[in-house]
Amino acid sequence: MRLRTMTKADIPAGMRLKEIAGWNQTEADWQRFLNASKDGCFVAETDGAVRGTAATISFERRFAWVGMVLVDPAYRGRGIGTALLEKSIAYLDFMGIPAIKLDATPAGKPIYEKLGFVTEYEIERWTLQRSAESVAANRPAERSDRMPTPRVEQILRADREAFGADRSALLRSVHNSNSRFTTGLWNAGRMEGYAFGRQGSFADHLGPWIAKNEVAASQMLERFLSRSAREVVVADCAMTNAFAKSLLEAVGFTYSRSLTRMYRGSNRHPGRPEWLCAILGPEFG
Image 1: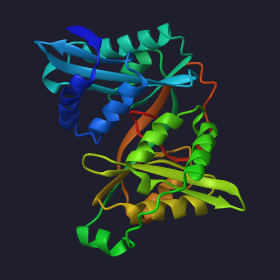
Image 2: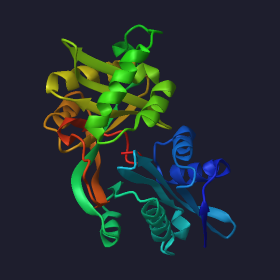
Image 3: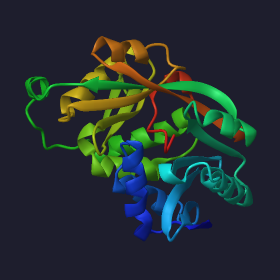
Image 4: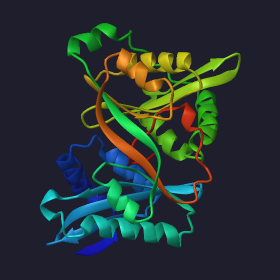
C-alpha cells in the first residue's frame, strides 16, 4: 500500500469509490476539497490503482474536518481506511489544528473512538421521494433573479456564528454553483435563518439549513422544495434542533440512516447547534 497526496487526476478514482458506496457527492465536491486543502487530501494505492481516499479541510484553523473516507470493498480488511485516517490526523496535527471533526457511520464510530474521537451529537439523514408529477405541480414559475450579493455576504458573515468558524469560501462555491437554492429570511432587518443547497449525483441536498425559530425553518424548507426539480431530496438533520425533524416528517421525508458528529481535541468553537436544522453534508460539516 502506498499513501500519497490526492490530485485532480485522482477525482475519477474517487468518484468510482463514491459510486460503489452509493454516496451523493459530485466531482465538484472533490474539487472543493482540493481547492481548500491541496496538501490535505490523500489516496491509498494498491496493485497500481487507487483503493481508498480521505480528505481534510480546515476552517479558520479553529477546527478541521475529515471526510470522503472511502475504501474499495474488495480491499477492505487490509488496514487501508485506518492508514488513511491516521495520515489525515497526522497531517492536521502537524498543521497545529486544535480540533478535528467528522460525521461517523455506526460502523465507523468504534474505529474513530479508538483514535481518540468522542461524540458531540447525533445526526439523522432524512429522504423525500417525489413523483415527477408532484414536483412539476408544486414548482412555481422559473425565476432568473439571484439573491443580491450583499445579502449573500450577510448570510456568510452570520454563518460564522452558527457554524463556529468562517467557511465563506466553501459556501460561496456552493452558492455560485446552485444559486437558486440559496435563501434567507429577515424580520425587521434581523436575520432569522438561511439555507443553501447542492445538486448531487442522485438527489438535491438541503444544507446548511439554519433557523432561529420554527416559522423561519418551515418557510425556508418550503422554498427549497419549490426550487428543487429532483424527485429525491435529502437532508442531514441535527438532533440538537427542536423542530427540524418534525418539519421534515410533515412534508413527507422519511428516516434513512444515522450519523454521529464526533471530535478529537479541544471543541472550543461548537457554533450554535440549536439553530442547526441540517448540516452542509457529512463530508464538509
